[in-house]
Length: 585
View 1 (cartoon, rainbow, N blue to C red):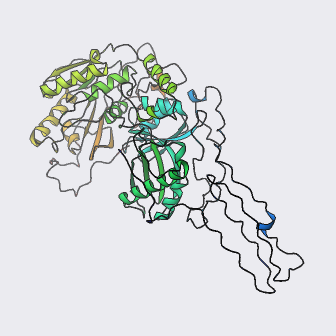
View 2 (view 1 turned 90 degrees about the vertical axis):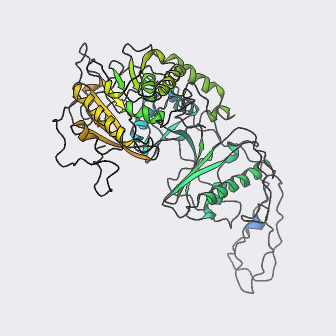
């Protein structure tokens, strides 16, 4: 792809050396004010500024104000030097906890054009003036679907990066090149890993353009870089996304033209996706270090009719009480996303091990960090499961795809797939976990069959009182069809469909060999996720049973029977006047 960028008379005006105006002669008797120093041409064409002789046209008072132009010796601007490298971290800091934030950068110098409407740097505003470096620590963002921020934060901290901050749809943390590689390989529920280039306030196109141009894009983008611009805007005056894209792209090109001294760029090199988000007039500019979204694991080249994203499936597993010692059942497995993700979690297989990432082709990130991160991921894989995962579906073609996907993911020996309706499920094991995403009817078409399927799931839960059941669905009557209230509800989004994750807890399985584990921690707000990504300590498999709703460590069994205040109504007959069940998260 080629992008021809030429100088034109269109806004903004092209960069050029301003012409110094002749000094004005002060009126007789007036005190001559200090004249500003003549502007120095860019570093690419150093010149000397000649001092003008003083004009004795007016009397000078006893304490005259010196003429800056006459007293300041002219100096040539040296070539732009690379900024000083950031303070190197302590030995092993990248493998330990990132608690200290980097030193605040020095105040930015005045822009070359005094007329440029650049907004002043606010106290505490984060900017990134330093060049990429192996010793630098960057602010990173892990984007995620709404409702999964706490899960992604837990995954990041399991990697050893505990200096995190949760925001809507994203989690911020700090790390070096090694953190970029390990986060891309290990994060299961995040969508992307991004590097923060700059943040600033902008409520008009002028500050958006000039402040974007002031960022050090040439330190990241080579001359042949492909840099498409994409973004979103929320509750901001700059809400026209196409115009903002063009303005940001133009500002970056103007910066690169100054650096590389050319007006034509062939975008044929590595891809640097530039993402912007404007939230309440605050602009955040990032580089996407992931490429294809993280839900593309590489093991599912062909999806089913209504696929569930791998990132959401991994989050459903981590929100449950399941661990590798218990049986996992999915009677509506489709192409096997939930069973495969569960097997990968139990065996500690990095989800990104079998795919490539955009930042692997960047010259700024040395390949040795990717090699080390992949070797670490291969070394931490665990042996196959003793208790096989069970997945079934009524569609034979979907089961064939599920078996193929399991082989590609390397977990085929850990899962048993079968073609069987959910109502014919016959398993006798106790203390199992049923995690499923049944058809919604909105995309699949047959609404009556969906209602019948939900009743079958309720019958399975009633016939297995020791099981814990977890169902992701937009259907509001699932609790009535199960014959009991859910112990916990969590609002999640499957694509653009708003769903509720209903969690029905069974009794806690008996402890083996008196192992307390992390179950004994009281007061936990959510089940402990089976996050076995590498950290500073040797990896181990924690049990996932800390009560999310109470301060005890048991799985409560609520009273049987339907809620008294609910009426048997169909999802598609509801007019929307009655509120949905409250989100207990």
